[in-house]
Amino acid sequence: MEPVDLKSRIEIALGRGHLSHWQRQFLVDIHARLVEYGPNTRLTDKQRAKLFEAIGNVPPISQTPQQSQSPRWRQRRRRSPLVREARYLAGRFVTAFGIAMALVVGSLIYSYFNGPHTPYSSGRAPALPDAGSLKPLARSQFTITDGDTIRLNGVAKGTRLVGFNAPESIEPRCDAEGNLGRRAKARLKQLVATAKLELKMVPCSCPPGTEGTDACNYGRSCGFLVADGRDVGEVLMSEGLAVPFVCGSTSCPPTPSPWCAS
Image (cartoon, rainbow, N blue to C red):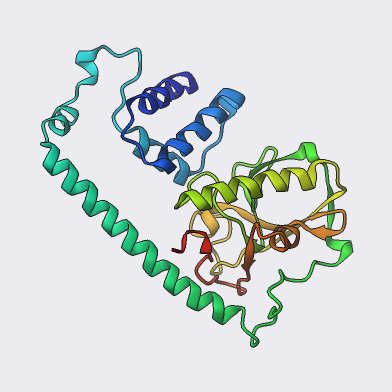
């Protein structure tokens, strides 16, 4: 789909309302990318699925009303307000229950992996790699996707920075996470703006044979990003903008996301 057509569909979806807070923020972010990068805009499979979930059956501007009025759309419009409300409340309940259970399980596992029996009981990220294994990186060679993800120029998938987890800024689970995620992203941009940067690529913590596929970290690579001799994750954690996230050699515990706890 052409960027111009996709932008128009996003604008129509934003104007029609009936979007959750995270959907509206997500569409605004994707629209800004399309405006800035045009045909060069890259989206992950997960982001593309979320995008079309949010814009639904919004028709392109070039279509006539008769063309855009598909049978499925007419069927949705005939649903009674009571049915729509019941489906909405049921969805909210399932989502809230799932988040609550994930937080409980994640907190237990997080406590286990960051207790005194782990190599990183201080709550810090893994030690930096040897200086000889770090490669110089110019600020112009990458863009920042999130507080813990960058994208190297010319690479289809992003690079997940290891040893920590930053709150989501694109698809937050609550307002608190979204606000903190935007702060973490802005702070990462500030850290790399004028610093001497170095990057160390490392294998992702995935089952053997899955590296580089969607089954391993959504196809992303993994690495350490060092600014003026200090791991950026360590800085973000020290400022309350990220939490430790230490994986094993072939798997990771549930991603710690404590920002939406009640």
